[in-house]
Amino acid sequence: MTVVKDSGSRAALPPFGEEHEELRESARRFIEREIAPHVDEWEDAREFPRDLYRRCGELGFLGLKFPEEYGGQGGTHLHDAVWVEELARCGDSGGVSAGLNAHTSIAMPPVFGFGSEEQRQRWVVPGIRGEKIGALGITEPGAGSDVASIRTHARPVDGGYVVNGAKTFITNGVRADFLVCACKTTEEGGHHGLSFLVLESDMPGYQVSRKLEKMGWHASDTGELSFTDVEVPDENLLGEENGGFYLIMANFAWERLLMAIGAVGAMQRLVARSIEYAQERDAFGRPIGRFQAIRHKIAAMGTKAEVARALTYDALRLFQSIQDGTGSGISQSDVIRQVTMAKLFTQRGLVEIADDALQIHGGYGYMREYGIERALRDARLGPIGGGTDEVMKEILGKQMGL
Ligand SMILES: Cc1cc2nc3c(=O)[nH]c(=O)nc-3n(C[C@H](O)[C@H](O)[C@H](O)COP(=O)(O)OP(=O)(O)OC[C@H]3O[C@@H](n4cnc5c(N)ncnc54)[C@H](O)[C@@H]3O)c2cc1C
Image 1 (cartoon, protein in one colour):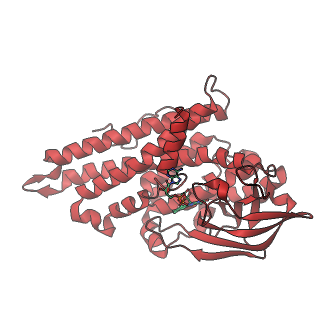
Image 2 (image 1 turned 135 degrees about the horizontal axis):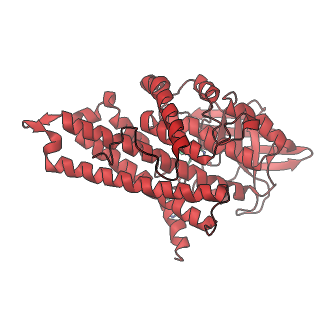
Image 3 (image 1 turned 60 degrees about the vertical axis):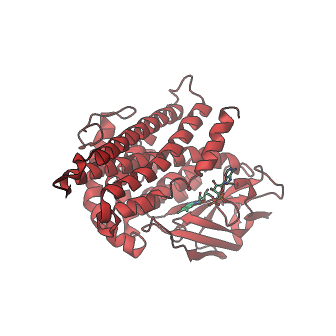
């Protein structure tokens, strides 16, 4: 039982070491004190307060993997992974995790990785402080999995670009101050004419057309955006013109890995809660955990959670070894394979575990106050967002030479 019911005192599992476990403890304390008690209210309000970014920034949680000279903590992706796992494990809201993570882990990294020094100062430094909020805009009404069919167009003009088009399903889309936005910069089809421009929400012609209502992730905002003749100066181009597809691919690895890590945290919590409930809830004169059907279900849930953790931590180890140059013999394609498998396994696995947890909780599981129904609703995004299950299988199939 102790294998799956972590009490928080377990020894560090590779690739984590003692310093990561110290961070884990402080992240957990902060989340339990300042996030978890407010989650219900934020879910009802359909957003968490903007101040939460500032508070997380003040405590250093938004800049864990960024260098100190930019106001970060000088850590690695492993530090970020601890934060993401803990947010999912004790934060109890996919929406809060999504809103914070979209900013730190999918919007800021391309600016940091591909941006100039000036661009880092403009968006990463205030982003780490939680003063400016970022979003990543790739998906469009007519282009999701098929990224190459993006139609938002940036027409080169003297000194910059004029952007026209629309984006949808953008996490933080409503309140983002800056949008790292994929645009077509040539008329040619395919992957090669994509570039990334940083659009700022106060640019004339930039409009939030809708805040979308959705099944889960209620505490996060998901926006639909439209751009009408938005004038974007040259200094807002990220990286090379027409080199945007490479940026998308580079970003996907971390986005998918962090989704897997978040799912690992959420699975652990659901297994632990199911064990507790099965011990407390009586039916027919005994705790329901004494019925073989329930006991076996929890045993299978715990096994799935452990497999998910082992696969995800292994993907994280490979990913980090490439980042810090210690991965001799490890190729980029090894990382992609492991990250893709982790994303695929954990996202569907979390939906299954959340559904099992709900079944174990019976009618109480269906009631809002227990938070289990929210876990199931929030989990359902996993097999869609950041690349669908089908797309993950296509990537793996191709890697296998099929
Ligand atoms: C809550 C939420 C938040 C999001 N946040 C962001 C964000 O911040 N930024 C952003 O850019 N995007 C975001 N997205 C978009 C998300 O990445 C896309 O929804 C996802 O990539 C799928 O695209 P689609 O919805 O257009 O589905 P489609 O691509 O239209 O797919 C529809 C179905 O067809 C299947 N399919 C498509 N191609 C193939 C194929 N080759 N083989 C087999 N099956 C296939 C898919 O797997 C799926 O089942 C978000 C989405 C949601 C719901």
